[in-house]
Image (cartoon, rainbow, N blue to C red; front, side, top):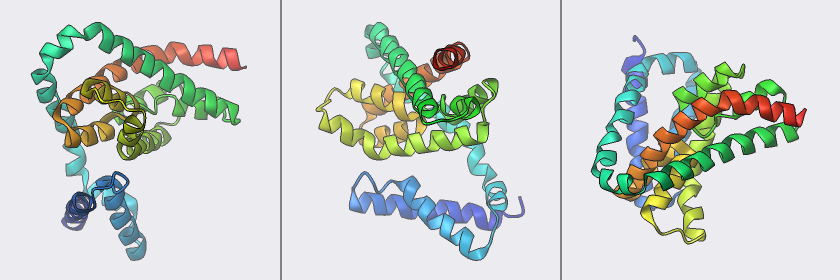
Length: 230
């Protein structure tokens, strides 16, 4: 924790500056996470500070991730009446979305010549990081690379997700939320919650359901894909 005196303030200041810039410019591609990374990474490179020291010093923020995810249950609870009325549709959408995310990512990786290890690493890209890393390890993938794939999927969903939904004229808030949660997990959910409270609630619901479906089906689906491909 000796590095917390500089890495923790650096992270917090970079993020709040990024939030302020994003609010001022109000363009989806100016995502606070991307801007904060653009601030922190050059500083680490210019000062020759290793990432391991930065990560260790910021461990307090990492420990807050789990309580933050649990906090998503509040908007979910407030939308419980709508969830009860549409639970069959919600489960169906999340099931189809999870299968599509797993099959498409794995198939594209294999088509491009990826090894089974890399294909297993990419398969759980559309669920939240802890689940993706656990699923990747169970499939003999590389959990660390899975975490990067999750980050990329989340950033892309947070930046371009609503642009695509607007392009295809998807206006229903619950549908938009389910789509974002399906494809881009926690990062997309955070963006959805900033835009609309109901969207954020349904996005967090999709995040949870898709995580469960992926963790249950991936160990069975991956061998089938490898057998079909091979």
